[in-house]
Image (cartoon, rainbow, N blue to C red; front, side):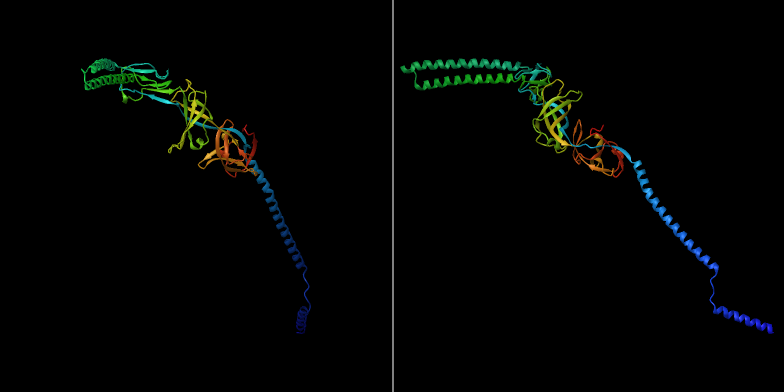
Length: 403
């Protein structure tokens, strides 16, 4: 009993002592705190390392991609055309024709053709007989009229003799003044009948002469459309066609904007189809009107006669239209679509840009670019059809000739 009481007292004393004294920290708690700090530090370092690595990868990858893009850029040949002074040429096509094409037909009443004196390709002089028409009827009429003239002349001579005798008798009183007047009138009428007969004869002779088909001017016979035995008349149309003096021309058809650049007297080279030979000529007339359907006009180029120039044949012409100073590009550099002609220009960043242009004459040096280029650009010379605006390229500069 006494021992139990003592123990209870000791237990209470221990509780009070514990409440009165502060608890000392445990050695294990310090270790936990230090561990947490190290983990936080390591986590922070790992985050910093990850962020730094990400930054490095980002900045390291951009040049690599750029190098990769540069490596994949298409290599293209470019040219800086500059500005060239070239002789303007207008290309045209058309037909060869006589400069003065003269249709010749029957001038008289016509008849049966007896003979034809010339053929196509012959040279004739003015007034030369080309074809003869039968004149047997007209010849008889002329003979009859000639005889009639002889009759009228005889009547006039008789009337004059009667008047002369009457004048000798009038002084003796055997013939009255009235008889003299009558005889004088008879004589005058007979003389007039002679003039009428002679005029009729001249008319018959002129009409008969018109039966012959004659050349109105000297020149080259182009066509013949009559044969011996053929019946011809005013409705027969053209029997012969003659090129006056053998002069020829090319009738070149041109668009109205090209026609506006021409003037009378400028030189041209004409090449007939089927031959490589060209003939020098000059524009002698420019059409004052434009065809409302085709929007074209005609430039007439005078040409000297040559056997190789056949009227009706086709020909091409190069007409000199003065000089022009502009960029000149090969045909391969100029592209075209529904929006019109264009070229690809390589900019300072080596990227392709589309540039609309207006083309002009086609010359031996190339195609003249009238608008759209200054001449200092780097123009893609070939393979433009495989490019798109904005494409990066690797330009290789070539000479202006594209070689």
